[in-house]
Image 1 (cartoon, rainbow, N blue to C red):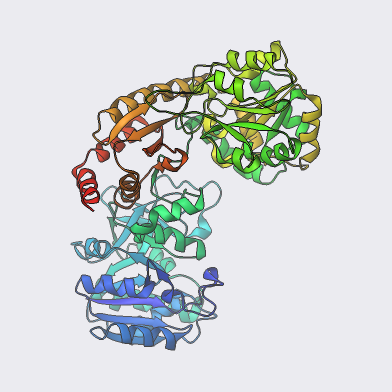
Image 2 (image 1 turned 90 degrees about the vertical axis):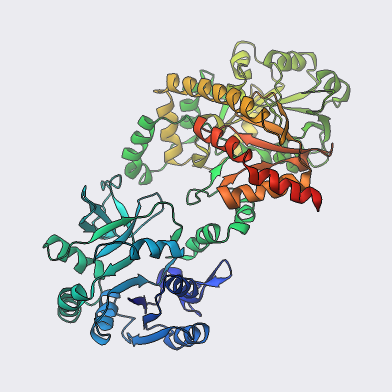
Length: 609
């Protein structure tokens, strides 16, 4: 068995990283891409390697010769790499290297576990391709396969239009095993002719697709079953590959990015959203409408306010739709500059950033006291100041009856009361908006992130509501002309059609929360689960803070489970996780993993240290 590695191209999509270094010499997890490929070959007993080079050829060849003296390299130069594509590189390789043995064909923009190659080499079929199930974020050539595992169609990206159905397609890894006979008698001849006579700037998959269509070769599909691999087309792919192939850095990578996890195979219990909404029907409507939405601007602010008011059943003049609730914080900071502020502790970091000199009242999940004491707030409330209620509070889940907050506001007309209701639907309490529509209070502002309840943090939706006209005018004056994108606006329209499904999603989340709490409290590493009115649970652990931190990191490294360590928000010395409520199956798996022996063993090791 010999390997052909195609590494001639300039890698335009990898610029600027590929300008002064060959793409294969970029590092992932402390090792270069080419080193990882050759290491995988060696792990599978392959030491005969043909490397097709072009761009920065001397650099690549010198590197591999130095790093792998045990490998027999044959170098084939594609000096026309600027104007040709891999069809020409592969034709050169098959012309210059005798086809006297079976061939592993590998493109150089891949990293993979050695087990990936082992699966291909174990295939009993002379011609086989490695495939993976198509997932969002993948691009390039896909294939269709028959019921008996034969590739029936090779579909390049140029044929994947806006109506293309990926649901039954498979992504090629661009790693193939071909028999010496096929390479010598069929593939080489057609590749050479096509590259020299018709087009030398296309992809060899085109030729392979023609041969499959004509029935000249049967290529069997070898489907991966979770073995790690990554394709590196552009600089963004490097971060995703780092996550996969550097497990010890996974927690650091996610903690520093604050989102953007769609290409990350982690189960995210840290960031909070309603996993039961939107419905599949809504997603289908969004998918069908996406081309038109992308080509159109969103509406003016007054129309956005009206559309959300239809859903909230409130007066539009009291409402401003936000591009996420966080959009309001700079305007809050400006409006309340110089005002005495009282905020809960702990709570969202945005309040402390907006009001760094605010005093805090305690929301403490201690044995003596659980939840928020309105009496303490009454005593601490600043004269003619601002009091913030986050209801339910994050990360504790503590909930105050809405009527009590509004009664407090009526009793203190000299105070402005800001009620943050980002999780209210999961508490059993009605929104303050419901009551304020009937009995307005000019000293109350309601702020809400819709991402948590609607399950769409990616579209950035929120609102602020108040009958204080001066404040609403202040917000409106600071808003850009187009404050929401068209996708977010269309989602507001869809909400009116799916009220019942949304209510059902809240009920399902509340049920799942109760079940998760019951499962968590049985675990040895859990000291208590704090009662919550949100779609998350605050869990006090029996571990030390150091042990909890290590377990958190290891959960992501070993099991791809991402938990939020919020211990630093409490000064009682205990350790805490905030655990988002996900699907019933995911919640159960989390509890099963936390009960596994390695968790207890790791904790014992840390205690001994």
